[in-house]
Length: 122
Image (cartoon, rainbow, N blue to C red; front, side, top):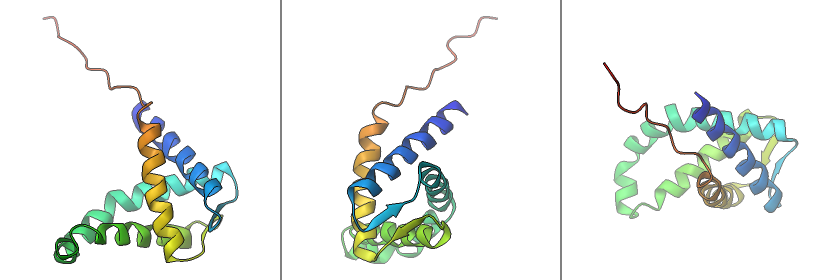
C-alpha cells in the first residue's frame, strides 16, 4: 500500500513538473496534479489495455508509434475529465506524454525497492 501511495506521489510531481515545463499544458495547483495522476492511473489501468488490444494491428503496422498517439489521446481524455488540467491540442498532449514518461522514469529511480518478507521460521 505504501508503494502505491509513493508511486502516486511520484506521478503527481512528474505531472506538475511537466506542466510547468510545457506552455501548452497547465495544471492549476498541486492538488490538481494529484487528481490528474489518479485519473491517469485509473485510465491506464482499466482502459488502456483494452485500447491496446483493439489497436494492435495499427500499432504493428506503425512499428509501435501508434502507442504514442494512444497515450496522447488518453491525456486529452484526462484533460476533459479534470477541470483544473488543460491541454491545448493533440501535439501538446503528445509532447506531454513523452516528457511525462521521461520525468516519471527519472523520478521512479528514487523509488525504494519493495521489501521481501524474508525466510520464514517455523
